[in-house]
Amino acid sequence: MIQPDVDRIFSVADEDSFRHEAFALFRFQAERCEPYRQYLDLIGVRADEVREIEQIPFLPIGLFKSHDIYCGTTPPEQIFTSSSTGGGVPSRHAMADLTIYERAFRGAFRNFYGDASEWSIYGLLPSYLERKGSSLIYMVDRLITDAGGHGGFYLNDYKRLIADINADTRPKILLGVTYALLDLAEQFAPDLHDVVVMETGGMKGHREELPKEELHRVLCNAFNVNAIHSEYGMAELTSQAYSKGQNRFYTPSWMRVLTRDLNDPFRILSTEQRGGINIIDLGNVYSCAFIQTEDAGRVFADGSFEIAGRIDKSEIRGCNLLVQ
Picture 1: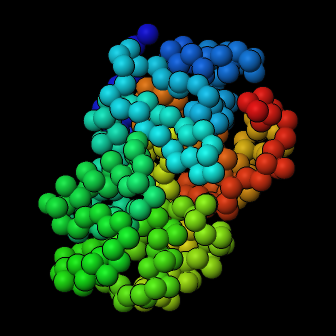
Picture 2 (picture 1 turned 180 degrees about the horizontal axis):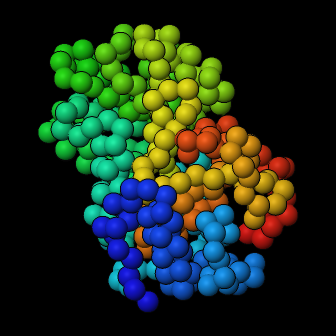
């Protein structure tokens, strides 16, 4: 079996090249990733009979908690873990080669914001800093380094964060976990009109969830900004999507999003239809690139997507129960 060509994956430029790399990676992982191979056997799918992107089975994301989703030939260089709010079992994502992860997040960031060296990057990510194994902390730390050290991490020292941002004349990004941004907004309401404010999600276990529109309205008013940017990523993914406002996310060229029927998880929906979010992340070279998430949303004709929230367990039907 030929090893995946990482250079080709990150050079995907059109639908034909994406399709070629997706099928090559699917066949590699169907053979080499044991949990994925077992899943395909369980649902009766033969890799050599899959002809369309929509026919590729997506692995339920919960299996990252119970199985080692890995097909590298050497021990992983790092294992990233998800948060485990409420004492649940965290997901584990084994990274065979950290240069692949770095290539993915630097490429995605560059696509939407330019080179990190042009920015000062401030991280307000207390719940991530307080635990080990966060892929988000790894990413932001490297981006701050790429920015020449302009910016930094701030745990709960909001006054120092505000003072440092106000003294900084460079273009600035404040990347924060949602509940911490709300705390900053309510306690200080600093004028951040010249700052890109980006939320990464994260309210569970800290504050009551707010609808995305209301959350962004509160933050826009408090910070005197026109829009709240968002980063969509998770421990089980290598790549990130970004929104520059209105909850409309765009992916890098090696990533695609589809929606599935909640009652029949093997049926892919048409654009504009609300359903479960499926992600093809070709950056997941040595794990599984085809992920059935627990988020709901819809995909638009241009490939962008929006997130409507988490799927209520009561909405899950049929074959989704295979992994419960």
